[in-house]
Length: 149
Image 1 (cartoon, rainbow, N blue to C red):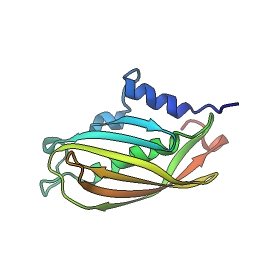
Image 2: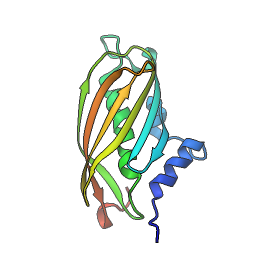
Image 3: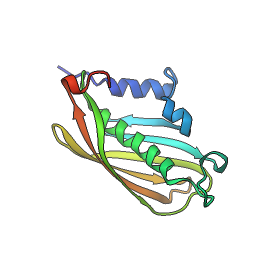
């Protein structure tokens, strides 16, 4: 019997436009564009009127949010009914500055344990150049821990 994967269906409905993007996606301007088992991709348009830091480049926290969203959705893609998750740790390497343009964050699960796992994400600009490399440790929540999340 095939297990239900509610987050996979949720993501597909976000991609198709049947559901609105989550509030953080609206606030920052990113959206899920691809979902599959243990992988996900998010995209956004970097805009200095909206996303600039005091130095005039894209604020690093925006890259963290973009990649955290993609990594979370990659992890959630294989969660079963009644399960949720949380991020335990996130590490980002900023590799080049961004001023404007389309960014794509592609995340994949590297190791999925019963409770803890490792996910990585590459963020690339519209030319395909690597802007940031991100890793995250995630934890699956079950039972009382997952309720209301």
